[in-house]
Amino acid sequence: MKTLILIGALLGVCLTQALADDSVNENNQGNDGGNSHQNVNINNQEHIANIHNYNSWNGWDAVWDYSMELFATRLFSKRACIVAKMNKEAFPSLEKLSKFKDQKPAKGTPPPPSLRFSISKTRVRNVAQFGRPIDKLCNGVPTYYAREYQGEALFFETQGCANAGILGLFGIYLCGNISGC
Image 1 (cartoon, rainbow, N blue to C red):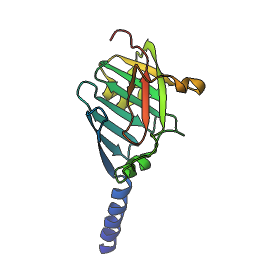
Image 2 (image 1 turned 45 degrees about the vertical axis):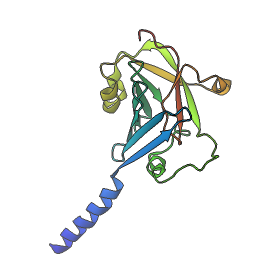
Image 3 (image 1 turned 90 degrees about the horizontal axis):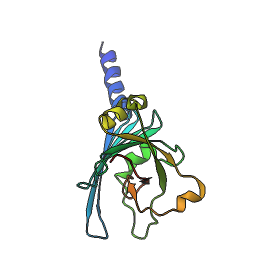
């Protein structure tokens, strides 16, 4: 009986580490004097990262669902939600997100890698098709699909784009006019 209890305790410790959730906080003092604060919560068991960008009206929330290979960003200023396919080669892994909390970029470090997405003008009719986490984020809000820009289109201006990336680690630019907002 003692052996079973010992084995159970060891299994509990091992599983706790494997299924643990992580939280990453990032504060950034911008060049224009503005502040931005982000919180990244990682659910290793469900392979999901929830990102909250606290920046008043320009704030946003996002879900990165690694199981569905999708991400969604709810832009408060646009009163809209954007869903797009993850580029598995470019998006940081959950492990890298978890380790980011212990790293601070040195001065003079080049800007983080980024991806740009073009927002379609057509609204998504069934948000539930993207899974429960994205449905919860986007439910009741006009939702649009976006596609990653490829090739030369990567060099266009970021004016008119919402930056929905993780400060200092990874940039995501969601670009386009959203009709009806």
